[in-house]
Image 1: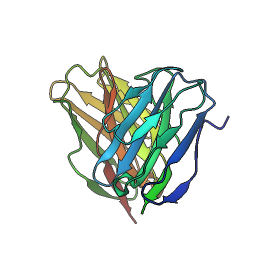
Image 2 (image 1 turned 30 degrees about the vertical axis):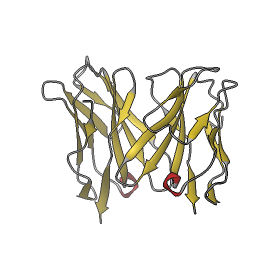
Image 3 (image 1 turned 90 degrees about the vertical axis):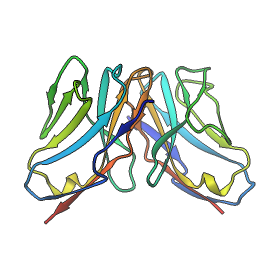
Image 4 (image 1 turned 60 degrees about the vertical axis):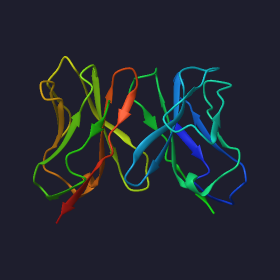
Length: 112
Length: 109
C-alpha cells in the first residue's frame, strides 16, 4: 500500500492566487488532518476531519478550507494565498481521532 | 493551559552513546503519549507510544519512560547511530493530540 500521499511535492505560488493541496490515503482511516510546519513553531493543526463528510477547525484555520467528500481524500485549499502561508504542509491520517497519526511526505509551498 | 514542550532544542551525542530526549507536558488528563521522528525533508514517523497506565515501554533500541508525578516523558535511544539524526517530537493526547516543538538530535562521529 502507498499509505498517505501528497501532491505536489513543492510549489511556488503568486500572492492572491488560489491553490489546492492534495492528500490521499489508502489505509481506510477515518480521521485526517492538515498541519503546517514552520521553523520554531512545530506542527500546527489547520483543519481536521473525524470521518468522511465532517470537518473541523484546528489551531490556525484562517485562509484555508477543506472538504472530505470520501474516506480517502482530504484536499486543502488556499483561496487567495498570502506570503505568511509560506510553509511546509503535512497531511496525516489516523484510524480514529486520537490514534497514532501517519504522515505524508509534505508539500513545500512558497507564496511570493 | 495545555502545553507540550522540550527541555533542549538541540542535543549532540557521540555515535555509539545512548541518547536521552526529554519532554514536559502540562495536561494531567492526557492518557496517551507518542514519540515521532522527523528526518530532513520527510514527514514525522511514529517511533513508540505509551499509555498513562504504564511507566515504561521498550521497542527496538528505544525506550519511553513516563513519570506522571512530574509530568515528564523521555525517549532513550541505545547505541545512537548516524541514522538517528533527526528532529524528535513528543505528543500528548487528551481529547486531541498536541505536538511539542521538537528536539534536534545531532550525532557526532
